[in-house]
Length: 388
View 1 (cartoon, helix red, strand yellow):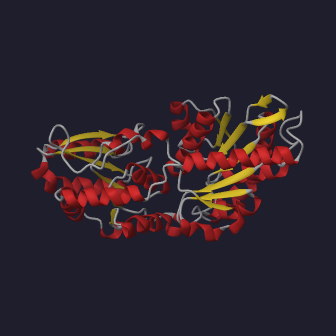
View 2 (cartoon, helix red, strand yellow):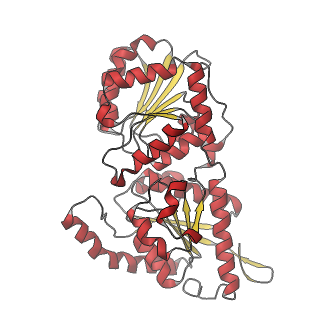
View 3 (cartoon, one colour):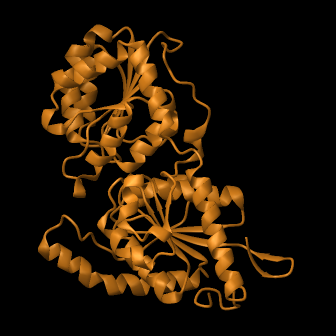
């Protein structure tokens, strides 16, 4: 809580710049929930774009979103990158308007192309600002914005070298509290006598994983009495994947998108997935063994680096997409699900990597930063943002 005078608390207003993909968005959602858990009067606003997943997820979460004009710079070609740079002043002006209108006390950037305009606006206005870097290798946006940040929270020890040492805190990636419910390491069958396999490829699905599973299904037919599958495909491959399971007689729930990922992960015996930062955080929070297939096109190969952390700990099997075939995927699935001791050991090692207190630690330091700034400058002025 920020105080403007003896006995008179003001609610704290937090703006989170995040979106585009689930890896940027969901850590922000976890922080929003933690701010409001610690102080229900906290106001939280997300700033994103019309292009990202935020327009779909945040209304479902009941969290307010406003959008700004912002475009991706990396991996889009010279002309589109130039357009993105030219749009930056407009995005900054819009962000200044938003921060002033919300009397913002703190801005959090989580990378992606919505972050630079908002962090730059916060710097211009003197609003306290922090960065969260959820990947093992920092993204371009966060590296560029690092000098403007008061604090930098990183998920992996390997990421600290991208920022000024005095600003860095290694805290893990925040996950929603639903992932942190007590979940025993699963080493036996479900109540129905079935193993549970969860397959997903990120918020949009993954064509390569979907194709490999279609090819793998015949080899999994021998487990049709003991296997239950939940497969999130994205919209494009939904019908084809569903038809493959039906043809093989495998019990499968095939969906385009999983809104209740905490339940899906906590009830899975084994997970097949990409290796995005949020996926890694959620896997380890739930202590789930996995077969991870990094997205090869990911900028800076950050998914490969994330996957290597899991593999080195014995928490996952790293299967590179260049080696991904239906036969190989089926072999790995059968190998893990058929070995209860291995399944349990991988789950325990996954859990050992989790940071259950990540969101709590980040929010605690953010609140301390804002309070310190308020004390140093004599409290929050009557004009709100811009008087910090």
